[in-house]
Image (tube, rainbow, N blue to C red; front, side, top):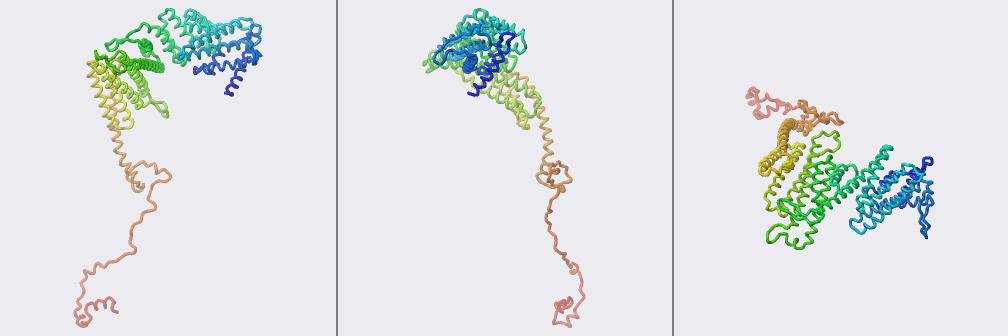
Amino acid sequence: MAAEKRGEARGAGMEENKENNKPNEGLGLEILQIIKESQLQHGLRHGDYQRYRGYCSRRLRRLRKTLGFKMGNRHKFTGKKVTPEMLSDSRYLLLVLMGAERAWSYSMQLKQEANTEPRKRFHLLSRLRKAAKHGEELERLCESNHVDAKTKLEAQAYHSYLTGMLRFELQEWKAAMEAFNKCKTIYEKLASAFTEELAVLYHQRVEEISPNIRYCAYNIGDQNAMNELIQMRLSAGGGGRMMAEKLEALITQTRAKQAATMSEVEWRGRTIPVKIDKVRIFLLGLADNEAAIAQAASEETKERLYESLLSESRDAIQAVREELKADAKQRDRALDGETGKVSNLQYLHSYLTYIKLWTVVKRNESMARVLQAKLKEPQPDESKRGPRPQDLIRLYDIILQSLAELPQLLGMEDDHSFQKEVALKTLVYKAYRCFFIAQSYVLVKKWSEALVLYQRVLKYAKEVQVQAKSCNSSLKDLPDVQELITEVNAETYSLQAAAILDTEDSAEIPSQSQEVKDNKPLCDRLEAFHLDPSLVGKQPNLVTFPPEFQPIPCKPLFFDLALNHVAFPPLDDKVEQKGKGGLTGYIKGIFGFGS
């Protein structure tokens, strides 16, 4: 915090010295530029008025200390006013300007708190009066001959702005409109006379006060001002969050005036009395919000309007719930014993819940259309993650979940036409969800699963066409089923062709992959061509090394195969001479075994 204050002191000192470097041309002060830079740097970028008020107080203290313009001492307060005779330095003008900004920021802080504490509105008006008084004093000082013409005009515009804000809060519409128009005229003239950088600031201020002028005109009696406010909201996508919130608040205030004349609403052939103010305001602006969504030029604006409509519907439903809880009889028995019909308050709750759920369906359908268009576009950068079919599946899951809650609304159980319409819408979105599930299977080359899902899409689409003949009115807000059938037929042919090509490739790949799994060296598979990246690596599998052992004989063996076919000579005479020895001894003698 101390470092932040030191940084403020250095920055403020540079600005103050910069504003004081015009001795020959008269005193000058860039009023709008100074307050805009200070507001953006000290809290107002996020709507933190309390932080900005603290900054203004610290800067006032530094200015008084630097100029020696102290309000007494620590024991006694002595009020002082800046007079035209003191205007030897532009920082005296800055002193009055910071006083006005401090009072204005405090009033805006109290305006935020007054939503829950209405008594703070009196303090808010007191602070705005003080800010307008400081603005008047600044304009009076700038009428001096020591101040240049540009600063005089800016001081007049600044005083008119603060006066307009005060009259606006006091609901003095004619006086507020005159002050705002004077401020707008001055800033438009200044924008046309100075550089483009300053002209941007002046045009931004004009855009800020234009909704207030339209609102004042509406309260005076101009019925076209409401339409102009709605058109300004449509074009406020780039104007910042604060500008959009301001327009929403003004439109809500305008509808609150119109809601006083609204007493009932009709839905599904039943008239429902509406006594809750918040629900009246919501239902009164429902048609305008739907028209604004249809006219939105960009998807960002459309998304913001959908979120605003959903937020308003939740608030209206919560108001009805609180009313149901407060009424003990309605809480204990939701049905009327005599007629058997759902009570009006409970039926109103069902109607508001239907609006919320159908808005969720339309919002997700709008997001799905955007993603589907991006899905068909080629992705220039492969490294970045683009949209995938899985993203669309999630959106259609939310749509189907919302549609599943519609038949369960109290009072809709016996409405057969309503049940048929919801069932038909469910079939349409089931077909689209099934289509994108099939596309997700195509990406991972699961051809059989994708083909079955495409057939399921065609089945859903044909059921929709058959059932749509009995309720044509419910198809006007739904996606085109015939277009989906055409796209599915085209995707089916592409799928079958891709599956055939993939089958041919897979028929060749297994034999090659089998060779890789066998880990055969190159010398054993020379007759089969195969792209093996390992052959050009550091360890190519060329031959088996060291070679495997093979069994071989240690020395040759000779067999006498002719012995069995030799006819020996007769040895009878020999045997008679050596009868005692016998044949065995004779053989031993021949081969030398006996010797």
